[in-house]
Length: 79
Image 1 (cartoon, rainbow, N blue to C red):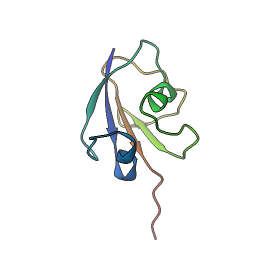
Image 2 (image 1 turned 90 degrees about the vertical axis):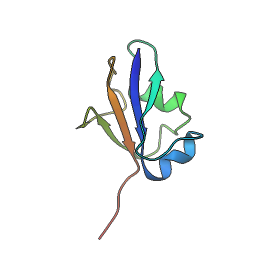
Image 3 (image 1 turned 180 degrees about the horizontal axis):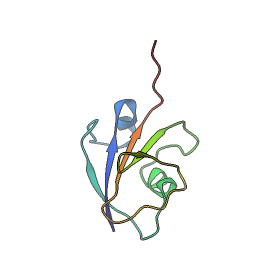
C-alpha cells in the first residue's frame, strides 16, 4: 500500500535527498505500523518524535492504512 511520508527539520538527515516538508510516497506492507516505517527509513526508534497521522497525534504502534499521511517532527523547544 502507499502512504505519504513527510519529515521536518533535522530529521531529513536520515533520508537521502529528502526535503523538509516535502512529501515522499512510500510503498509499505499492509498492516505496517509507524515503527515499521521508522525502521525502513533508518530513523532510530528510541528517538523522541512528534508523530502526526493525517494531521492528528499518533503513536509508533499505530497501524497505517492506504493513503495515510505520516508527518514526523523532532521535539520542539522554545521560549
